[in-house]
Image (cartoon, rainbow, N blue to C red; front, top):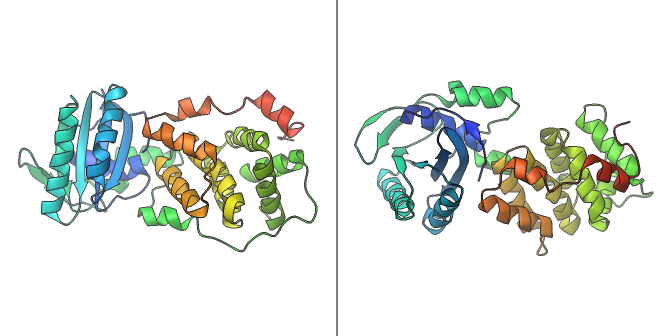
Length: 313
């Protein structure tokens, strides 16, 4: 679930469908997408597979209601017109049973380029806009948010790489934090030794793990990618602990799609999911915003005390 909090104008189905890849961070397929609005502000965008939406729709709509959504849009994306129509209409019924105003119930075979759209309630139809030129896409890409061609592209970013062995000599927490900050700012390079030290440190010292969230919050997008790369070099529980950083920082960056993939990767990595991942997963389901998530990370003074000095020098 992406918490966008983005003021946009979605007055026409063509505009709405073209905005979905930007709102989600990838091009959805074989999915039902719910966009919850509070007036013109996007509260969140939730995507589920067609095969699972019947099990999750009530949770999505209850979240929208509790966050005082004024309306929801429902879009089914599939080449199977009949199945898409059934799932979209059933989702709309659940929304209305919970007292939500359903603006549109739409179907399109694909979000990848201009396609036909159909309003399943009115029978109106037309052509979607190209997501590449959508004003929402342009704005978010200018802000540094990438759009993947498919969710699978996000999953590929979490592929395992050459494993880092246990560090021969442990780095100090301050050295680790300084190197992390340097890489985030384009002044350093990730090494296997650093990856191993990060893994060891965050697994054995939760306070330091949380302090690294403060370090990463200076540039959450860059930090997210760094810790994805670190996690690729690690295995088992240590990998899961580093994925905790990815989950939290992706959430801070407002990239719910990447956050969800990181959670799923951690779930496949270990049977002992780190508590912070479980808490963020529950909070995301409840519609927590990036601003609210930022309130739980240590302040800079606390982080410096934990790290042992100024990590920016």
